[in-house]
Amino acid sequence: MEKGLCIGSMAVAGLLLLVFLLDLLLGFPFSRAGGSGFSSPYSLVDICGILGSGILGYLAFNAYQDVK
Image (cartoon, rainbow, N blue to C red; front, side):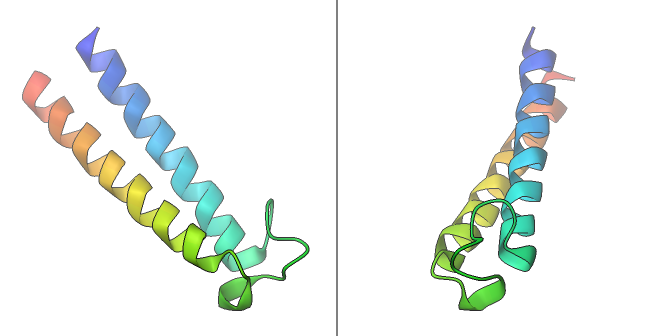
């Protein structure tokens, strides 16, 4: 059960990282009205989301190594 939770957490972190990177670089799916890239008004939210998903991925991987 613990391995499944760790793998699920890594999958969620990867999905969130992908979504926030797409939003920051292309303006898809969230920042259509504000433009894309760092000129978007939501770029700070995207950067914080990328950092948060990276931290979640690291913690999930570290926990998976402990359970293994």
